[in-house]
Length: 327
Length: 124
Image 1 (cartoon, each protein chain N blue to C red):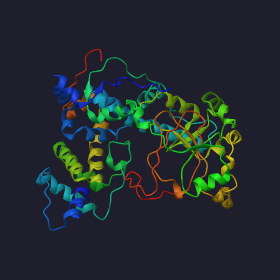
Image 2: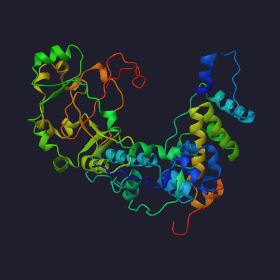
Image 3: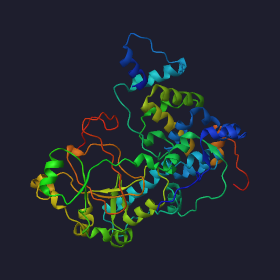
Image 4: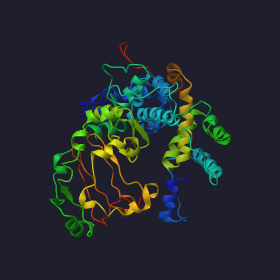
């Protein structure tokens, strides 16, 4: 279960709330000094060029700058740099692990707290003076907002069970029609073996791909349980068959899809990527997209729930664009 | 190089005047200098976070480094102009320059440089 903060932990509020705070205007003006004329977006932009030490010195300058320098996006970049460095250390096949430098440990509830803990320090706690900024509040708001159940109430994708291969071909594949097939995975060992406890026990130190970085699985679960990301990172790993080949024993391709994998003819070396492990906490997911090379895919949910939103072919959706991605 | 100007030209062609009420003449002139210099040679991406207070060591060219060696007041006006005109490389350069001015300093020096008041209570 992911814990969400009720209020912003660094005392950030939407800009409009400043109307109720007489001291707000003066505090903003004095606390930002010359930076106030740049506007909040530009202040955040120039903070992106600073390392952790410089951010720390800035954060001590005023309560406004403390609010700005606490912005999660800044610390996520720094935290991911630690993961990338750890990955390079592994790739260098150093038997001692990382020589020098720090590893990312997930202590606390956020990238900022995790980074500070990873450096051996303790994040400051206690009451913070209010900072009013829509730019700073925005990402927290998206992360903390509960989804309205009404948005997810529509269920109009056909759900079938006991589907024969022939039925599947005629009713769905040949018509490019999506479908939910129940009962395909109930005998998979994965249903019991892919609990968090079991996966961490078996593969906790193995890194899995989550976008641009690799997360050791145990670290990933710590992050997934306690973060403030409005767009949480999720494991989306095409290398799992080489990194943790035992996982291949925990599932099998459902019978309705077997024997028609034409890419198989290219052999494993030449065929495009074809199997992924996905692990993510609540509200993680992909944006609108077309699958690579306009291929089709089957997805099985082993733990938790996944919401699918699908548009029919030819839908004018600006978010998808016209390009067809290929791996 | 300016996405704003390009969009206006795309919409209205090159015969129409382009109003830029948010940019002072002196600043626009400096922006044009930048655009003229870089029109055929786009600058390198500046590595973040900055590894040094010397921008040249961060991948900035000597010309660009000299270009932003200006009064703080003008530098901030340039940031606003680059933002308004939507010239990404100029915005990156000017923001990197300000960041380099923060980087080398301790907290008190940062306050002095940018006229920031320390409003923390003794407990904080």
